[in-house]
Every structure is written in structure tokens, then in C-alpha cells.
Image 1: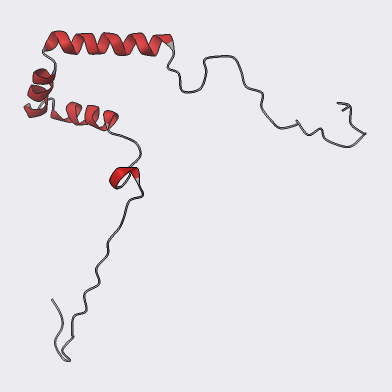
Image 2: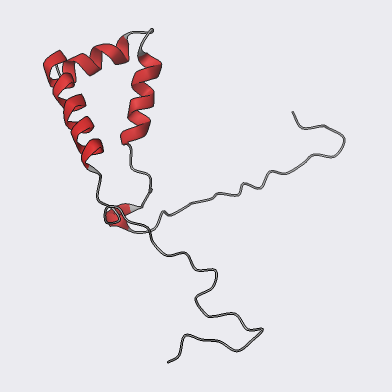
Length: 103
């Protein structure tokens, strides 16, 4: 096929962005990986799980601990065995008595 187009027409590739250089999608870059290894090493040196438990109990650091928990929780929520989430609703019928307002 010829890449040239007739006057007044737009080529099919117009408006599509070409990918730039960089790492493959889903692969953490070297700096991110090294930083994560340093953080995990420091956590291990500080006492690991016991250190985190102490931070969770301390009112001065509990909010930082909960922020960390939010970062490591899964982003997607699934139901049993990875299936869809099932929602169960209940409708309750309550008789109304004329002349009395419900509380």
C-alpha cells in the first residue's frame, strides 16, 4: 500500500500516538525495584512483622500504618474462587398503622 493520501484526506495513522522508549509494560524499572529492596531490608533490620505491629498499636503512627495497609491491599475485589462479587439484598415489608407516625 502507498502511504501517500489524496489532497484533503487524513491518513489512517493520524491521531494515534506512537509508543515511546522505555521498559515493557508491567515490568518495574530498576530504580523502583532497588528502592523496594532497600525498604524491605530496612524493615527486616527494624524487626519486621513485630516492628509493624508496634507501629499499628502506637496512636502516633497508626495512621501511617493504615496508609501502608491501603497500599498493599489488592486493587480488585473478587468473590469466592476469583468469581464475581455476589450482592444479597433483603426487602422487609412493615405494616403501617393509620394515624401513627413511624419512628
